[in-house]
Each structure stands twice: as C-alpha cells, then as structure tokens.
Length: 287
Image: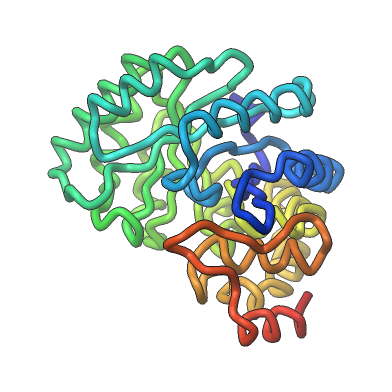
C-alpha cells in the first residue's frame, strides 16, 4: 500500500448552476489536482457530498474518473453508512475494478458501542473485494473510534489503515505506537498532518488539496522526508485559510475557492447553501 503514501485529495463533486453533476468540470478538477502532484484520489467521500448524490450519479462519476485518469494515480472510493446491511449490499453491487481501496466512515447518528463499530467494520471488510480504510471523524458521526477499537480492527486482514480526524493527538499517538507495521495511519485533518507524520502517519486525505494541490503536496513531501521546518512554513500559509473551509460547512468553502480559481462552480446541494458574500469576501483576501 505504498501507493497510498503522501497526499490523497478528497475530491469535491462539481455541479452546474442547476445542481446537476458537471462532468466537464470534474475532468478539469482531475487534471488540476493531478498536475498539482497529488499521489491519489478519493472519490465519493463525504467532501464529495455523497449523501446527496444518487446511486446512478455515483456510478457515472466513478466511470468518468476511471476513464479520465486511466490508471495514472490510485483511486480510493468512499462507501459508508449507518445501516450495516445496506452498506454491505452497496459494496457487493459496486464495480470496484480499478479501485485500490475503500474509505468507509464510521456509522453516524446511531452512536453504536465500540463492539458495534467493530462488528460493522468486520462485516464490511469481509464483503469488500478491495482493502478497507477506516474513517474516524467524531465531529460528524457523533461517535469516536477509540485507539483500542482501531488497533483491534487493524488485525483484520482486509483493513489496511485509518483516516484519523478525531483531532486527538494522544489517540493518534497510541495508534502509531501499537499498530501493525504495515497499517496506514492517515491524517484526516489538513492542519494536523505534519504533526501526525512526525510520529508515523504516511500522509493525508486532504480537503485543501482540491484547491492548493502543489503547495499541499510539497508540504507533505517535506514532512515525510523529515524536513519539518520547510513543511511548517508551507503549513503556516494555510493557518488563516483553513478555518474558512468549514465556516459554512464542508465543502462550501473549498468549492467557493475552486470557483475563484476558475476550476468549477461553487454550487452545492441542499441542505448546504453556496458560500455567502461574507465568506467569499474573506476568501478573496487570501486566495
């Protein structure tokens, strides 16, 4: 899984002004981030607004990405949910040929016990024809994968890593200290990436890399090379910008930034709303 080392970009889903999927803009975004140096793509993650994308659209988005990328970079595909049986069924009916791994967010809203989370992921991993990456984002799911849970799941032969977005450095350190040597610790928080790399993370799955692929990949490469002073200087350039990505919820901020860069429109689907004038004004001073 060395191919998942470095910067993965959690791709947004571009929309037209009538909120249909903009496949031309998707191809433009793919070219933009690949030319910017990213190591792999994450399709249909939560940054892609996956809860509001139809199953037919998801199939076509994956087809377009596969066709356009033509194997030049690895693909990670997002399949998650809070209905275990339904998520297993989706995995079994999705054409995952050409996909390197699945990324699956921990079940949201239900707030399962740690034992329930373990049972959920074990069933997903048993059903998946490709390796599974756990995704811990308690700020969204309302439940946390503890270090003990992650380490237990790391023993499953088809679970290869975790995207860690808990914001809890001590928890991440516990994982790094005790994980199997080939289990991937991946930052799920752009601004914590250099810190996590310093004690064993292999990279990041990034929101900011949609709009800033070159400086972000350079930052991660410096960190992976142990050049933390250089990595920090690049990281500091995002200190004021990063909070704006989430001020009106993700991916509103990054889509507004991509619109300012003429990559795709800032349109999002309800219940999200496109960036307010106030947010665009703040972004305009930094982009």
